[in-house]
Length: 525
Ligand code: HEM
Image (cartoon, rainbow, N blue to C red; front, top):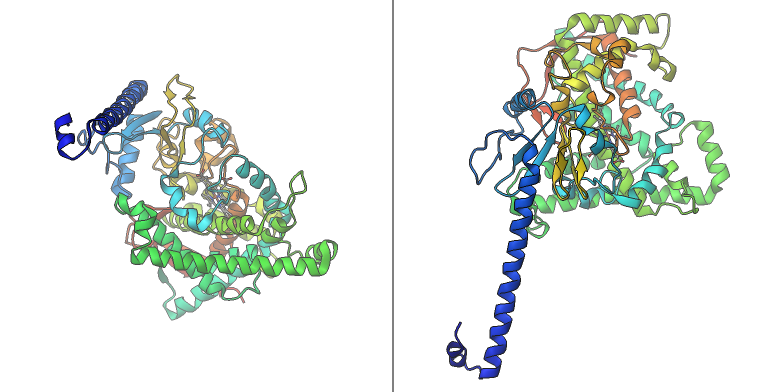
């Protein structure tokens, strides 16, 4: 703008030159920022050249929609990992590269890095923040290490042991309702949707394990959790601008999310308050004695009693975040694992029969037919079948991290600081250079002899390294109890409807996973 124009605007010459200086300074700053950004972008592209890149749709869209969350997307992933068995680079639009890692040797430095160097990638996880707060899944740095340390005892086998009884009871309840549904038809065709398994079995169990049964309105709480999960996923798959909080909260879904969050938080808060009250009334000694005697020490108790090395306890807000996180982390994942394990056994009657014989042998002469903690190690073939199912159908198909430092991979490639990398669990489990005939369901891959021949990172349904799944023993215990009793009492048969896999927060089947169940005995009394 010329000096003359500024004079015309009514500014005196001194002010006009001041404006001009500010304008030039502003423009130079913007130009400098743009040049710096261009240089950084160019440098990043150059450094990422060591990663192979599948063909793009075009320069603007990059690889967007290359692997949609559908059956076709998963088939494309299988194809990609066969072509690029170590790692590859894709572009989400013109300026956002993502490095996908799909080989056990390559993921080692990423999984073993500390949570401070490779924190969780916030694209998806930030949507969970209003619900889960600073719980284990979302927190980072010192807070995460302190909480992980304090939470670990809550998953100790001594705490988990009494849950086995509860797993038996809820599976009996589930089978009771299957028997009623079967009625005179002899065969029940049922969609093992996550909702049905979750509501009949899993959620009730988790709720009793982690929150006391005396709580008010547990069913509303369960409904709240299911609604929150569905809303988070819906938002993630929506247009980018709905990721902005202030816009989202103006939408009907945003308001529903807010209401469900409040309901879930109020519920957890009430539980914690009540427990604190009992603790202060009884005193730690009596409280612990009563709980140990009744074998009802649970997750909330462990958190309430835990103290770090400086004697500092967790605040109520921290405990709430952890309880909500555990409910989120555990409710759909195990249901997904169970559904797919039943599906794989339905498709392979020979393995199903071998599992059944194993359970019959274990429980012969035992009344009531109940799986106990010590039995869990006596079901080696069933365990192999579950593991092979978790390989073929991992509930969590991928996890992602942001690099806050350059990460050097074993093949010499470097993921430069600032980039996002995806540890593609599904691709690792379907990598033909690690798993011969990866699409074949073959439990013998998990024969102890065969395990030794593979990298421990070839099978990572629960992730690995310092941020692995804290609930994996809990999940495996539950899956073993549910499957053992189910196979003892029912024959599982495939339905004509072949499932189309759908990777959402967990791996599902479009329209539910349809199976037929045929009672073998009268069912639990
Ligand atoms: C088959 C069942 C399950 C599978 C496949 C599974 C898988 C995973 C995976 C892959 C992660 C790593 C997430 C990431 O790095 O972003 C994870 C973390 C986690 N899981 Fe699980 N999980 C299962 C069951 C459970 C259960 C039953 C609980 C609780 C009772 C649980 C609680 C958690 C928590 C709290 C974390 C965060 C740990 C941390 O960052 O320190 N999970 N899980």
